[in-house]
Length: 200
Image 1: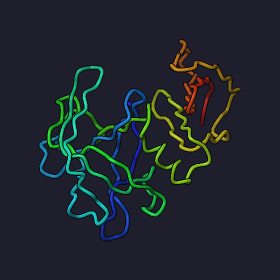
Image 2: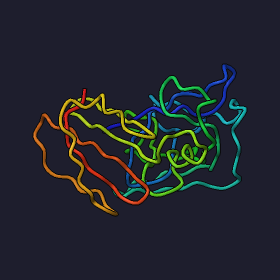
Image 3: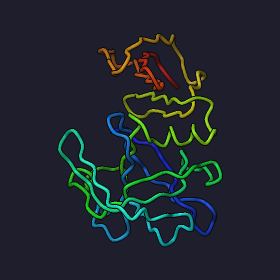
Image 4: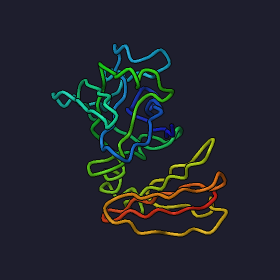
């Protein structure tokens, strides 16, 4: 499982709470545990009454995933930014599911929640629309023990090998690689490109 960190909300110190979120290219929504949810002992919980920028959308939230798990709760909106040390001023307002019910698979995982990076209405798209990104793209470098997620472009200084792009319009295709390779995904509005290289 690979996850990234997103800070959500604006608390007394002016910044949000860091949530670890599984990077999911098959969905578009963000789901985190809400205060009061029995969502797992090791989770961070979002308290909408402690964030001065939280907005209750007055709608319910429900999302099911391909493997059959489903989460539900309230639909909220708040300031978000990527990274464990980002500041609220760097973020933008985005809808998310503040869950009161978590599937057992979500309760057992290490990460707090999930962030959808596919389709439309994603945090990446919201940051691009707020003109905070150089490009509407993200990149994932996935290794055996760790990885990197970059948003708004690709930092090629992380690459230690040749980058080869393979167009796969409309879908993501992968190929078998050996243990020393990493898979690097660039998401563009119209097409997906898959690259294979080593990254530091």
